[in-house]
Length: 222
Ligand SMILES: N[C@@H](CCC(=O)N[C@@H](CS)C(=O)NCC(=O)O)C(=O)O
Image (cartoon, rainbow, N blue to C red; front, side, top):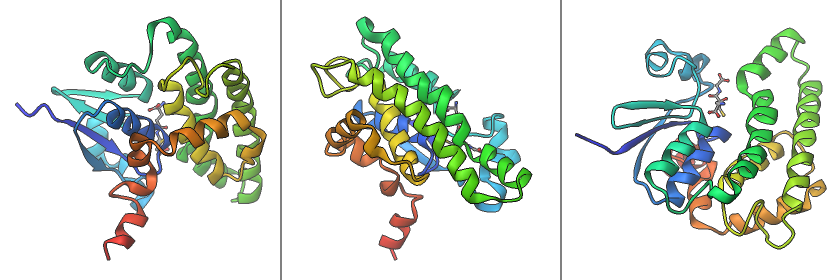
């Protein structure tokens, strides 16, 4: 039986980015399967993909004939089967999940492609206003994340003394915040976390520009 993990991902998807960082951090080999979220109405909406993941979203991870969706569940699964390094150290688990959820359920759903598409159609494509609206909500959520992370005064990390799932949510969210013109200078602790992570191999490898389906990669290969 082939036990190699398969990850259905899109280079710019922040939820897939979380899983990629975890896989590189834990040194878990995996096969990357791109799902283009915008081409021809979005490959996530194809009947074939929906047979695999009826939620019509990425990430989707296959392991040992199990189909796993929802990045938080996938991260916990990976942490169970490959405990080191731990993404959810037991003594800080609730705090870590609490921070992650500000992004996972408070910010990311609003920046999702299908939500933006809906706003564009319903509000006659007023892109500038839509970006402003989104940028407001991203800043609102990031302010709470910044406050929580600042409570961790004795370490440059968000919670505790090492990288945890918190950084796996923060870094992709910063990437998306920039796409939507959020001024990150309002979040000094988050910038400090970014500076620290951007030099680390798992974060570099998981970056959207490094993915096989990124336009940067196809240009490089031309
Ligand atoms: N709560 C889910 C959200 C997944 C999600 O929203 N994925 C986005 C990309 S980051 C997606 O596939 N969007 C497709 C669409 O909006 O049509 C998770 O954490 O995995």
